[in-house]
Image 1 (tube, rainbow, N blue to C red):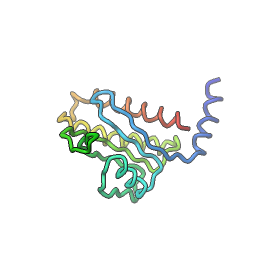
Image 2 (cartoon, helix red, strand yellow):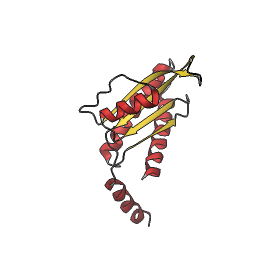
Image 3 (cartoon, rainbow, N blue to C red):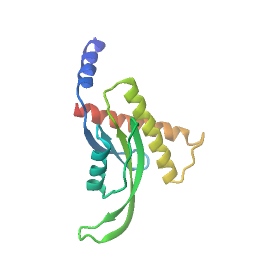
Length: 152
């Protein structure tokens, strides 16, 4: 019986306090999406400074999730500034416990991230691009959910 084994597993997931960060790449534009789950604002700021030399303050007060992007300049091994600009899309979640509210928050932030990706790639949001948006949302959610599931 499928349901019998599934429910206890979900309850076990919900007991753990998840604190992690990981990267995925979207399937259409190959953009980097860095996900942070369970970090405070100060912790997130320190991680972004260390990982990306991003030193702008991140305010998460009152939010369950946040989506933003950072334009970065590639630095070569000899510390000379290069001209390769890349974008990192960030999704932050206060928590993720497989609840309906947490899933809704993740989907909400994925939606904002996709809007930013379309804007960055100069693609209008329209009925003609809706299918690409839907496919991208499903793929991003699937990749993030799989990463979270593998961590628990």
